[in-house]
Amino acid sequence: QVQLVESGGGLVQAGGSLRLSCAASGLSFSTYAMGWFRQAPGKEREIVAAISRSGISTNYADSVKGRFTISRENTKNTVYLQMNSLQPEDTAVYSCARGRPYGDPSLDDRNYTYWGQGTQVTVSS
Image (cartoon, rainbow, N blue to C red; front, side, top):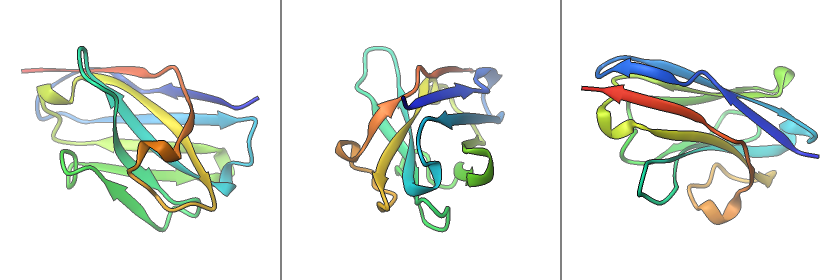
């Protein structure tokens, strides 16, 4: 079955950086677009970044544009999220998710199935 396992979260001061990883198994990884989501306490889950199956095309939510970078290594079945200039409002559980096969890097969360358990990111002020 599809498994997505995130890592790399932690506690960082405002202005700092973190790099999240998501290791995928049980799927033909290079077939699928992938996305990163986050959910803060008391808030709905939101998508922050998406990447096409080749990695050539990416898409970002306005709240993270210019600060976060999504990338992938299909030979390692892994998708990454580099997060720079972190702010306290970025505090959330971050999860990766599988998008559509041969799909665009969509920011519509209806295009995603199978989420990992997530990794906690906490940004202190």
